Image 1 (cartoon, rainbow, N blue to C red):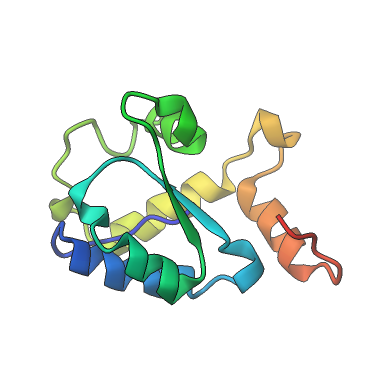
Image 2 (image 1 turned 120 degrees about the horizontal axis):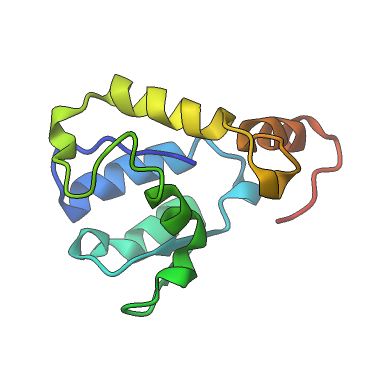
Length: 129
């Protein structure tokens, strides 16, 4: 999971930050991006071009199409719904991102997403996802 710190909720800011963060991943791991409805994705064509990832939009009122996001939203211990995220620093978001990625998940056989991600990156024959 990647959390993005935005200075402003604009499509230009999201484009800049998202392209930078996705650029940290190998191309085989940035094949698609599923997004909710929102004006911040106005530059979705540029994001797709600049990252090589196909951008998909969820249908309105269909949260199951964003399963990981909805599951993570249930972990409101970090940020209550409707929290003004502008009061949190990039360092705050990095700490939360790290904690969430290191938290073991039952669905992953009690392994953490970080553990499996690192295993995938270090394997010589990592599969195409």
